[in-house]
Length: 462
Image (tube, rainbow, N blue to C red; front, side, top):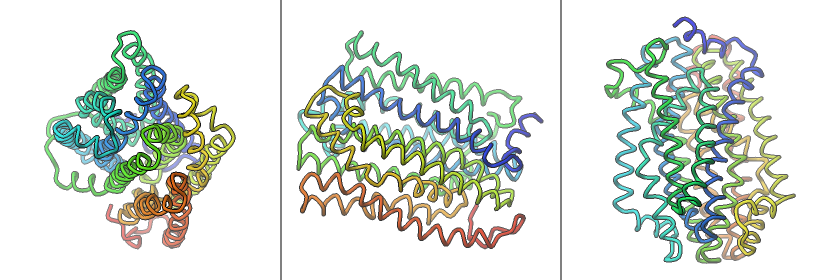
């Protein structure tokens, strides 16, 4: 057990650059793998089922985002608390957090599955499905929703693995799901003729395999954090803190659900079903670089959270500044790919000429301001790590609800369908300006704190 207790202590002593490589490196690989995991379905469906199936899959994105929102509501908040508790060496409560993650994910997963299945067709039509695409969207989501509890448990416990000093295992499990999906999807889609339903089944089975390994890991009584009697009782305070801290990413994913709904509706009104499929392809490609930056954020989270809990504020500032640099570099690579190779990138998903042309044009327009997104994401995550929930929520929501949503309806009035695509870079720019202003205030507060000071000057609730 001593070895396990020593694992997170390096977060407060090791060089920040080395820690970022150790924690963010595996997280980046895991998030990249997760993005590829999502892309695999689109690629096999696009080539194995057809262009309308791609549009049907894109229609499911809002519901998938909403499911992810409820997953992050528990997992992200609990992992943040876990990092701080380990920094404070409060291992008893950290184990209770582990138990509460299991209980909350089961409850939320079952409720979400039941409600969504009961009203699936009306939900999908509301999200932009048509008579041409509803059959594909329905078949995919029926399988995904039946495995919803598995997905929530896997994602939630994987977050705790990373927060408790096991980033490499968290990465390996994510890679495992990708490899299994890569093997199973073509078997189910092509060999067994299951179509889009086969892609969904491959996804659920891959996550179930990873969840089984995580459950075995936390069942080992010799580990510092493990399943034990008493931790599965719902702790109101832990649940409340987990949900309140996870509220920012929950609202961000919920906003993504709402915005994708309006994007689908606008594209359907101005360009038709195929345009929805084009956005689905563009979203998958762009999301690859966003997920890499999310990996950077996940790597930063335990380092910033631990050192904030240990009152080592100079290290908090250092990890933030370095993470911003790395995130901006990643975003610039995404920008370069989108501008220089749009047709080649979208051709991976489909061979349909009309769909390729629509998606290539969309990829260029959507990512015009992508280099600014890394700073916005990292800064929002820092506010969350420090327990400044309201500001984190504002930054998380600003791009999508405050800026993007109104622009989605205003700009097409002047630029037709092109205005829908241009709404994205303009909202990115406005969100960057807001984030920059708020970051100046945060840095002033952090600069007033010396290592070891009481953090109440920041108004933190952690």
